Image 1 (cartoon, rainbow, N blue to C red):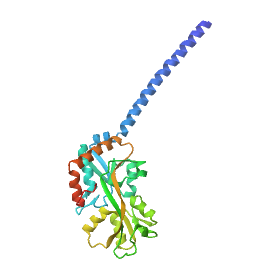
Image 2: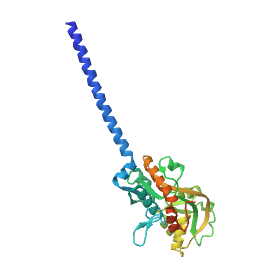
Image 3: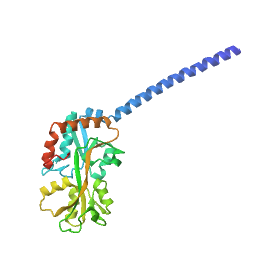
Length: 275
């Protein structure tokens, strides 16, 4: 009787072991499937190729980089570069316009795949995001009203009202020099506040100012100081976009090498703005 009880106990234990193994195999298979799905879900390049479009976040209010022409069409240097990059990837660029102060959040929320909006490459951004190779080199300038003869350098900004997009590189420069930040949505609004004397100055991009003055030579604003440090800008991506960034870098390198970049740059600035 004891032998039968012992034999029954051994058989029952064996059943539990086999069942457990089966359960583990099922769990492993499920985990492997989930891992594959997660990996696939994070492959932004695969998504872009599958959908046939590269979704691009941009302001649409920042000439000559991204703005609307007289017919209401979205255009600009960044727009043309992004369209050419998408073309080299074998897809089309789809633009979603977003205010500058919300554009990073839009990328985080996966509303778009990349940002094309003259985004400066700086260490604190590189901690959270990926950048393409640089495609713009620019210099910060201090802009004031023609009547303002007191502001002659960045150090003179202390205590003055500076019209800035809150999260831009230029806002950081204004803060560093002790200015009071007046929040604006973009370059044009900053210039209008200076024109109406509701702001004293703005720190912005030399290329944007030159383009603005070309279109509105009578605007009563001037450059009073130029930074000695040039900054680099790149197309910006989430950290899960390594494969996409590699392909975008290849596209940019081709665009620069075959002369396409020169044509786009000459059109908008009259010169190469990468060198």
